Image (cartoon, rainbow, N blue to C red; front, side, top):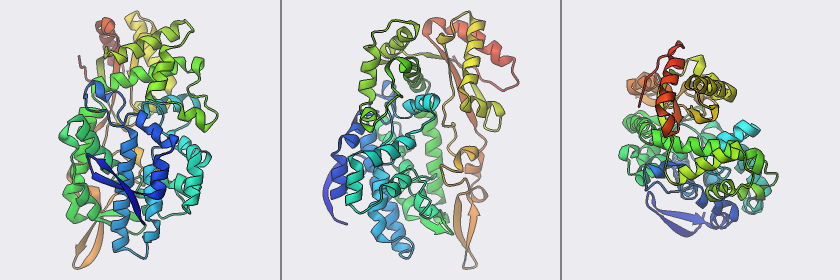
Length: 434
């Protein structure tokens, strides 16, 4: 595999690229990722967090290649070096389907159309110029597309886990990258040590016991970044405002009604904001959406007035994630108790649980919850689950899902009292935070 250029990167120093990778980078489909921030809304709390899906995708490409190259050195019969380019392409295209404001738009798309960015990824790889470029490089677009989301059934499980697992190329790039750009140092991890300690056990990626501390630091880092950045109250406030604004105006400007790849590619952080603030129709929905976007642009954020911690095994947790109507009914109940319009109350329960290692969330997407740690006993290789060897990771399993109630600053006290009454009458533990 021949490299024809390089890109300077503050995290990895240099990212080298092949001819097909450079051709893909130069397409409008890939360049669009420059206009999608990696962390929607985080820059309003951490001003340096202006990095985008573009550079993250290149970082994942590099990291996926490092993982595969390491495995091919130790398992040449399983990890054919001819597949290095395939893995790098899957890594660089793993986020190609992300919409405006990243996961924020995906929540809207899921609620309105039942789609995810993975569905869009397949469409963009197969129905744009990416198809020709991937095909000319000698790869099947179906294979690249399915591998980019970690669901290539024709490949071994470990092959997919390079792209989608609990220690995949994605997390090994985004933790140090998000840490660097936010200035929050909790995300610093020993990526090289983790990669160098990856082994194959049966059909899965596993980790040598010598790197257990590095693996534990990865989970601690992710947990701390969730607390400090991803689930920060102000960061989530910005995300809620964008999400609700897009939901309110979707029927008027058709953000989720794209029929062609070109229509989808036209959607990015900037174009969506412009489309919302430029709406001509005047009604309750558009007025609220415009206020939310205007307040977002001026950092006049919603306020978190009530917070509850719900155990991942609690039926309420799963119901709130999977049933938007239930969330809406709770918002209505709180609003009625506060004597306000339902549109002034916002219940936030992120679709990604506030756990670094979540048993119910892991099975399909992350290649299974059962991470194997490989050691030796009496010169015989042994396999144990990560729980058997790491009490620390075992303890993280018991953390809770997080839900918050937000409102505009002027209604803060009323919604706080109403939330306390509504949730206080329900059999769930709760925590108040003003």
